[in-house]
Amino acid sequence: MALFFDAEWFDARLAERGLSRGVMAAAAGLSEADLALAFKDQRELSAAEVAHFAELLGVDAREVAERAGVSTPVPPSGLTEEGRMAALERRVAALEAEVARLRRG
Image (tube, rainbow, N blue to C red; front, side, top):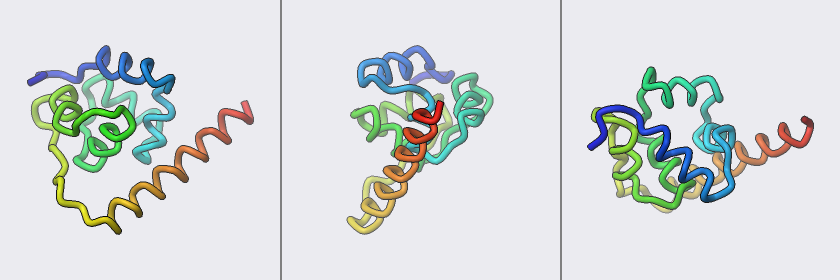
C-alpha cells in the first residue's frame, strides 16, 4: 500500500493510453487544479473519483486507491446498472467538454 500519491504510476498509466491529466480530471468531474492537489498529496480522492480513474486507466479500483495513498477509499462494487450508466454519461459529457476546450486552444 502506498503511503503517498504515486504520481509517477498515474502518469505512466495515462501515457500508456495517450491521455493527459486534464482528461483524467474531466473524467472525474474535477478541475485540473483539484487534480494537481491530489498529485501533490494535498487532496485525497473520493471513492467516486477512484472509480472514475480506475475505469479510465483500465485497472482495478483497489489498485487506484492503493496508488493514491493510505486513506483513499475503495468504491463499492455493487453499483446498479442505472447508476453505472448515469455515471458513464456524466463522464462522457465531461470528456467531450474537455476535448472541445482543447480544440479551441
